[in-house]
Structures are given as structure tokens and as C-alpha cells.
Image 1 (cartoon, helix red, strand yellow):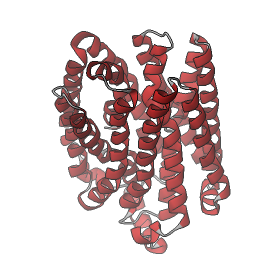
Image 2 (image 1 turned 45 degrees about the vertical axis):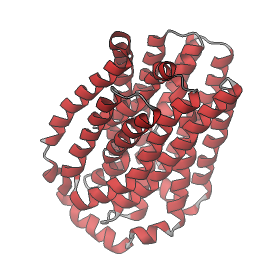
Image 3 (image 1 turned 45 degrees about the horizontal axis):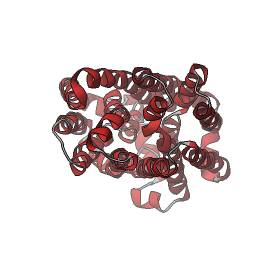
Amino acid sequence: MSAAARGVGESFAVFLLPVSTEFGWSRAEAASIYALLMLCLGVFSPVAGRLFDKFGPRVLFPLGMGCLALGPFLASHLTALWQFYFCLSIVVGFGAAALGIAVQSALLSRWFRGSLTTAIAVVSGAAGVGVMTFSPFTQYLIGDLGWRGAYGGIAVLVACLGVIVLFGPWRRIAQGHPDLRQTAQATAAASNWTFRKAVRSRPFWALFAVHILTANSMFAVQPQVVAFLVESGFDPILAASAFGVAGISATGGLLLFGMIADKYGALLSVTLSYSLTIFGYVILFLLALAPSFGLLWAFVILYGASFGSRGPVISALTARIFGRGPDLGLIMGAIFTGMGAGAAMGATMGGYIHDITDGYAIVIAWSLIMISIPVVLFWTVPELKRAAMRR
């Protein structure tokens, strides 16, 4: 489910050039589809969290897979920008939120305690597999069937996966680990964290700020990576494949930084991961000046390994700070709204900056500034630093 949700959403980076070329859209117009998708992912996350708290994964997960299949199917027949907004931003955005890390983390917290960050990282890491498989698969489909046929192929693939999800043992899974049920109830009662209380607390807004700033930085670059590589002279298949390798690199990074967080503390984990992202942006800037295969793969590894690596750590910290009570899904979803808002702003900002400057240098500079602030918050906000130092 994680692979499908991320793969369908991120495949738009491969569709960006052929779709914008056919309709004559500017880069900002094309990127706005992805920006609205990320915004909807954030907006729908609290909705998905509340649905999870109320109905559980047995209802929510098949519904999410259905939306992931429906959006691309409808997109294969579209002719106007507003239709893309509805199908690829709203429908797919809800599907991705229903299967997203906020809901997954709330469920995993019922099964894992000391290794929760690693557990979330394993599931989130499957998203990298989705990017690795969907991106080159989509590029091949576009080459053989055109972009409309490619969207139809994605719809069929996701629908087949959705049938498997529909018959999963969700009632049993939703109950959680027997040894953790009483502990979770006691923790929830002791902390007394309701949603209303959470939104009035400093750690809630600190975690929200971390999400919005990080996503703003990453998604100013993410939707344009394939286009950037193609315009720099790389073959489209190589560019899409490099994008896919970045996805599998993200899987390794998620696992690595998740294990570091569980063993040595989240503070060390996030500091290292943000440092990798900063170095990745520096290499991307050098790649714009002097394209080379060495710089390409250095960027792919560094940027990919750190992309999304903070998500499991933040989710585990949220569960640690706010307990595992009946509102945890909603609290996680609300905090995750920052990711959607930041991604939407970043994707839109990146598109406009590219159109105005006809280049990527200012986009990279903007991303560097945004990515430098969250790590400061982890070191300066007392509640975050205290929770992040615990193992």
C-alpha cells in the first residue's frame, strides 16, 4: 500500500514533460497539479486519521486503494487542467492520505514499542520501492502507449493490488499486539492527550513546523528532478531510472536512520539526515554547472537516502509525546497536514521560480534555506529535544 501510494503520486514527475508539452502549459501550471496533490494529501490526513480512529483499517485501506486506481483511470481521458486537479490531486490525494504515514504510524504503534521508529521506517521504505518501480515503468509505458495509455496501465496495476488489500485480515491487525494493549490504555489515560489539548501545545506546532519547512524544501526540487536531468542532457530513460534509484536509496535511508533513532536517539538521526540533504543540494547545484554521471549518482544517493527519512522519526516522536490514545490518528494526521501544505508551497514556488529565472539555481538556494531551519528546531525546542534524545 505504501509503495502504491507513493509510486502513483511521484510518477507525475515522469508525466510532467509530455503532459505539459501536449497542452502547452507552463512549468508552474504543470507543477501546480502536483502541488495541489501534496496539499490534498495534507488536508485529507486528519480526515483519514479520524476515519481510522472510528472505522479502522478494514474500511479505510481498501477505500484508499480504490481512489489510487480511480484517479489515474480518469486521468487517461482528461483534456483540461481543472480535470487533472480533480483526478490527480483530489482523488489520488485522498487515496494517498488514507494509506499515508500518519495512519500507518498510528496502526504500527499498536504493535511496536522500542523499535517503533524502525518499524515505521520499514513500511515507509516500501514507498521508495514504489518510486523505483513506478517511475521507469511509467516512462516505458509513455514511450509505448503515450501518457494516456500509461495512466490506464497504472490504474489496472493498482486495481489488482487493491483486490489483495480488500481481503486482508484487518480486524485482527487493528487489535494490535496483546502485550501492548493494556500498556497503551494506561499511557493514554496518564497522558490525557486529547486533540484539543494537543493543538494548544508547543510540541504539536514545533512538529508541524518541521513538516512544513522540510516538505517545502524537498518538493521545490522533487517534481522537477526528471525534467532537470533531461534538460541537462541526460537520456529520458536514464533520468527516470535515476529518479527510481533515488527512491530505492530512500528505502535504505529510511531503514538506516530509523535504526539509528531507535539505537542512539532521534536527535542524532535527524541531524545526520538533514546534513545529507544539504550535501545533496550542493551536488545538484554543481550538476547544473557541469553535468556528469559521477555527480548524478552522488546526488541520487545522497538526496534519495535522506528523502523522507525524517517521516518515521517524526511519527515515532509524535506517538511518544502524545501517547497512544483514541485521538492519536487525528493528532498525527493534523501534524502531517504541515507536510502537505509545505509540499504544495514548495512545488508551486519551485515551478514559478523556474519560470521566472529559466533555471534551477534559485530553486536550489531556496531549498537549502528551508532545509536548514528544521534541524535547528530539533536542537532548540525543549520538548522535541528531550523526546528526541530518548531511546
